Each structure stands twice: as structure tokens, then as C-alpha cells.
Image (cartoon, rainbow, N blue to C red):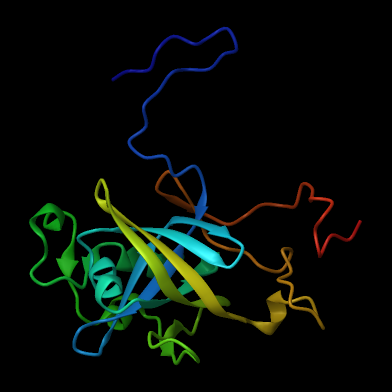
Length: 208
């Protein structure tokens, strides 16, 4: 479908293949049936207080693991780690590779070897955290909803948060938004965040 003539306001009517207007990239760690760990990237994410809502491919190993063993970690890579994220994006822990994924994915059982990343133990849940990520969540699945096209909607309660000291406001539990830089995924491209342009009046870290 080609774009339509511009409206009076100058907008075009379009139909993009995806609607990733800008969301954080995260790495999901789960436990495989044999006790090893799977690691996969994703970018469908939002949070409501201490609950995360994640969109995961139904035919991926992460979704399978979470339905059977409902614990996970969510680790947020900083922008310099985007090549590791991209290396993970073309492999799957499923074997054999599902037919729907065969053209785009290859099987890899050792995701750390593929990515060049490393694990460190979690404190509450079984799946490990990604050591190189400066912000890490441990979480337990509260509900998983299938049937959303090719995706599973996972609602997970965060039970512990780990943050590198350099991204925390000293003496507080607040992540410093000027020190923390998530990797943003926008229309299949990776971005750092830009300069601060403002803040909410309820911000715990605003300087003005």
C-alpha cells in the first residue's frame, strides 16, 4: 500500500509493518527444561508500578520456558551493547527451529557464546542476570496470555532490582535518568537517548 496524499495538516496516511516507535531493548533470561539458561532480546515492554508487561514471540524458547517455569530476569543493555543484542536477534533456543522462524533464525544452544555476554547469579529467582547490563530486574510471572497474534503477553512482578552504582542517585533508591542510558529500539534501528528536554513536577531526581 502506498502512502496517501497529505492531509490539511501535512500528515500522510501510512501503514508501517511494525509500530516500534521507540521502546527499550531488554534481554530475557529463562530456565530451559534441562536446567541450562536461555537468553533472548525483546523490545515490547511497559511497566505499571512493580509489574512488567512483556511481549514475547509465542514460538520462541523464552515463551515456552516461562509457561513451564514462570521466573525470569530482565536486563537492560546500554547502547554500547547493541551489537551483542543484534547477534542474539537471529538465533533461537528452540530445536528444531519452528517452521515459521526457519528463514530468519538458526538454532543456538549457547547464547553467551553467540552474544559475548556473561551471566551472574540472581538472588531470588532461578534465571541469572546479564552481568554487563547496568540495570537488571528479577521477576516472577503472574499471568501469561496467549492468542495475541504471534505473541505471548507476559505480566511479571519485579521482586528485586539491581543497578550499577554509577546510575543511582547517591543515598537513594532512585535511578539517575541523566546517568542511565537505555538502548532504544525504533523502527528496527538502535538509538541512545538524547539530551534531557524537561521533567514531570513529580520527578524524584529533577534538579530544577
